[in-house]
Length: 281
Image 1 (tube, helix red, strand yellow):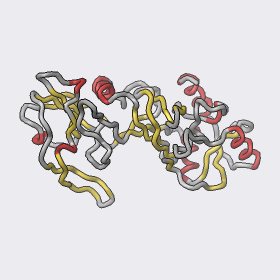
Image 2 (cartoon, helix red, strand yellow):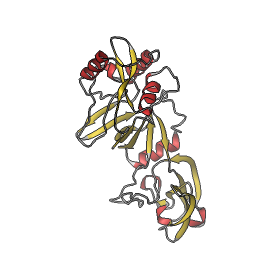
Image 3 (cartoon, helix red, strand yellow):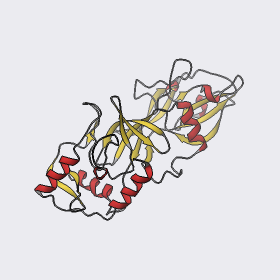
Image 4 (cartoon, one colour):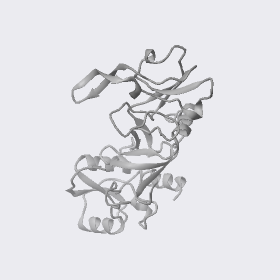
């Protein structure tokens, strides 16, 4: 299914209304549109999402998100980021947690040249991210050292914590550096005095490829044999129009119910039987 067809499907569903589920609604929908996974531990894919590679009807999905299985991975083709691994799906928030498969350097260049929040992606799966970095250029190569203060936001509120400067600076980036000029990705909340004199911000683009050490698996040094991991990117499939299927399905999930669609009655409805949980990992 191509993006144009998916977009047409979404428009087709805009006028659907919610209704109380009947017995034939439940049986008809789940016979034709059962939930699916790419592996037993992967996120559950259910209406209004669907797997493009499945044998289910196109009526089993009503969002612009294109999902498919690649081996054990759940893959989403994002119009800006390209192919991404889906690590979690939150149906109450209408979001997919994703990790782009494109190399970090290529993605950094894309974010610098194009603001994805303003890019014309047909409003398909708007991007959200918590931690961001900015590109900084320096006249010499250096290794971050020392301790710096960094804002932290958690259950205890907001406060400053002491962290290693190496946890807020990554680089040099090989694809954007040469023998006389070195590019680093610096957390947006880091201080310029943690960098050598002569360094300056060369792009204000918010780049969601940098986390400050809350995840021990994140590699912050960039060079031969190492990688810079994408960090906390979510794609949102919600729709602002109350009569749209994504909006109605989100309301179902927020009320602890599953969302379904009756092809016979041409309506979206909430299943009366509550389900357990809405965040799938």
